Amino acid sequence: MARKGDVLANPFHLVLLGLAGLFVATSLAYLVSGSILDSPPAGASDASRRAALWFDRHGPRLLAAELALMLPAAALLVAFDRRMGRARRRKPRR
Image 1 (cartoon, rainbow, N blue to C red):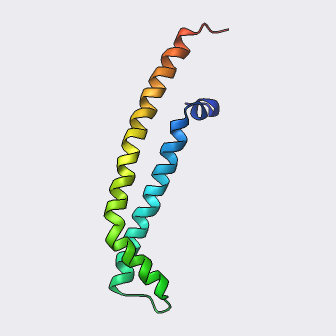
Image 2: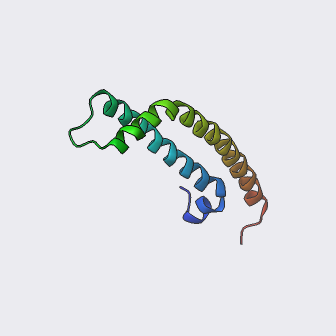
């Protein structure tokens, strides 16, 4: 199991975590926008309808862009972890 210091030693962990959180939030907003457009709730404001229309138009492109950012971040995370793993094995333990 990774210790807390090991996880924070790689900056790409935090980058990937932030991008993944943004991807989940965008996915949920895109999912909800469809239900708002199909049958708007009783107290729905005009702003929520406009936001739903925006997500309906731009949601797939935004999700693709977030995924395109997540893939290289994940590759860099793995590469950095492997490199740091080799460096740790070379250092003599005290």
